[in-house]
Length: 175
Image (cartoon, rainbow, N blue to C red; front, side, top):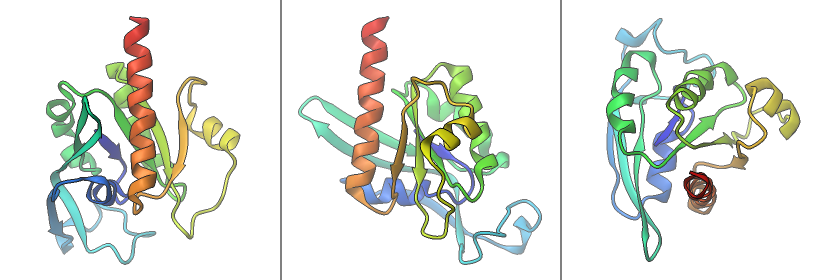
């Protein structure tokens, strides 16, 4: 799963790393979302995911990941339970301009006990904070990987997914 707040880069992530043409359920943002979707830092955003994004990436001979990008708005969270069934783990994308938007995803995966990595999507206009400051702000456990990446770059996305697979495999060995 690729999760996080509204406009954090989930669709971009899935589209950039997928080896197949990704399924995207984008719809134009209309006046109906006024007051529901915070566009204050996303003035150029014209569309949003209304169901999920789907892609696939082969990491090795025996590891194929099916990628499900979740919608970020609260009104679509009911889909997360169905999408998370059978998931190996999750990438929680974070936009440091809107840190509060990632907490529902962090809480959700902690509650499920699903392995997850936190990936700070480096938007050009974001403030820069050190890893310790970000970990403190997100109240991350020491064992939770914190990564810096760019959702537009497939190599960056692939590195994030490899970190997630390594975490999931390490957890599976402990059990």
